[in-house]
Image 1 (cartoon, rainbow, N blue to C red):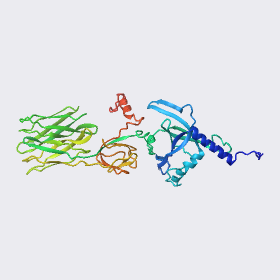
Image 2: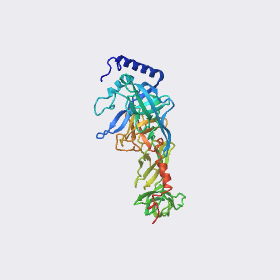
Image 3: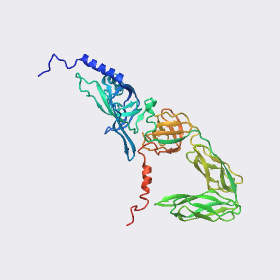
Image 4: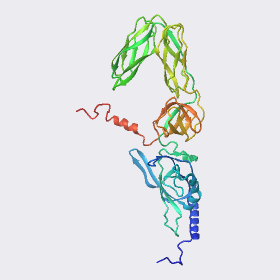
Amino acid sequence: MALNPFFLQGTSSEQRLAQDLINEHLKIFGVEVTYIPRKFVNRMSIMEEVQSSKFDDNFAIEAYVNNYDGYGGAGDVLTKFGMSLKDEVTLTISKERFEDFISPFLSAADDGTDQSEIILSTRPREGDLVYFPLGQRLFEIKFVEHEDPFYQLGKNYVYQLKCELFEYEDEVIDTSIDAIDTQVQDEGYISTLRLVGLGRTATATAAIGQGYVREIFLNNDGSGFTSPPIITFEDSPANNPATAIGILTTRANITSIEKIIMTSAGAGYATAPKITISGGGGTGAAATCSVETTYNGVIRFNIIDGGVGYSTAPTVTVGQPGAGTTAVGIASVGLAGVDHVVKSIFINDPGIGYATAPTVTIADPPSMAGIGTFQFNEVIEGSRSYAQARVKSWDKDTNILTVSNVGIGSTVSGFFRGEDIVGKTSGATYTLGSYNSDDVNDKYNDASEFELNADQILDFTESNPFGVY
């Protein structure tokens, strides 16, 4: 039987009145929240899985908080990885207000192609974010209920947004609202890049002498070393003994001495001094040497200025003798405070035939001066690795750059020391001095601690850590 034609189930005027009353009610009793739509930046071509997304728009809209007695959900949960927050909130917004003031802007980005950043603009979407100002928190929409209340006067007037506390992964959040953007500035997997702002060329001099160690012969490289051994030379009559260090190498799980390199060639030797190799946990290593008693050679390099900005060891050029063999030096780079400097120059070959001390020239650092200021959330790229990341913060006083999403747009998972780091938007360019990929901000990144404790129980360096049968 048909409905009674003398009773109306809701006219358009009645529906407009109900909508206006709801809108007014939300403006009086609601709170102003910020709706942040999710944009899909990159999706897989086959499965259409979203690989990365960004949040760079914001829309203010009034919402009624349904949770009058506090947050819903499981609350604070203690897990084996730490404290996990499971707060939920339900917000009611006007259907008309969303369709009139937010939906048109979203439609402009929805062009109907496969490259659309927004695939649905007519209603709030699951996955979008809502900033709740009372708790200063970001919530993610998990479900949108559009039929509660159920067709009053034949129409629906509101959306109920059922939201959970947002757990940041690697999304780009840049709404230009500091209260929102700073929520995730220190979240996620953060890597620290120490950049070189202003380089300075290192300088050094050479000292020459007679009766120096001309060459070292490694007769037996030994085995079983766990740390570099101590190399000791017999004292010289001039009380100027040679000094050297051992460089280790590992082949077929056996650690031995690869070579012995001099830090000083000594002086005053009439015969080849005895070389003693001790310490380091190894055995069997032995070495001898030859000396030059007639002509002068470089017996020592003296660092005058270690310079600044040496992320990799520079080339050392030694002046040629009038007649003889040119000396060869090898630079060693290390940290002095926050700067990378030339710490020492080893003697790879002391040369022969110097009448006067030769000049020593050390190559310039990779970058003599950094330029520009990196911008929050811009993409940076390594000039050689082509690895990319997004800027989290930049401190120009200390040249410390923190980034996230390292490796985006590249098959390389990290940066190379000594390469230029370039801001794709700002154009800022600095040289990478050191790169720390350890994450200190991810609450689930306790792998090192787990491994350390596990190693105290099981020693996997043994062939069978569970016992011998």
